[in-house]
Length: 182
Image 1 (cartoon, rainbow, N blue to C red):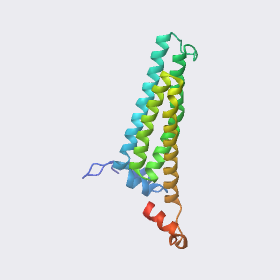
Image 2: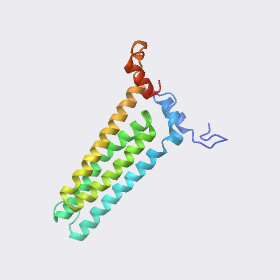
Image 3: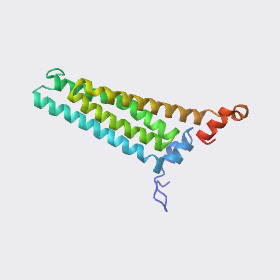
């Protein structure tokens, strides 16, 4: 049993682990090249979280606040709170990004994910400067999370809900067929 093909050197490990699952056919088609934008976005998100954590470390040193403390200078508190807020939303973002990318459309999910990361960076910078500077980017990132949720739900519905012939012939069924290419 080899893990690479002879001609294209594409990894085939995903066939071994997902070939008998319900998601197998979808992941088999999407994984090697198509999931790369989500992988890159995930790496960018980890780099952003590392950057935010480093900013907290620098603020601790600047204002001489020892690590167990979370209160002190107002600027430190804003930086610390912005870092914690971004960390709290990380699992939600990653989950929605991957589900929307796998089940709806890779490009749409990647575009929304990139915009979300930009909004989170603006949120962090705005909150570090002044408390009111966080509101615009906060609302933008929340809208993008709702968009990713909508894409994920639409993709899951399109993947798992099969239309009967009666529903498929209605106007709604024809529109859904155009959207999901049934």
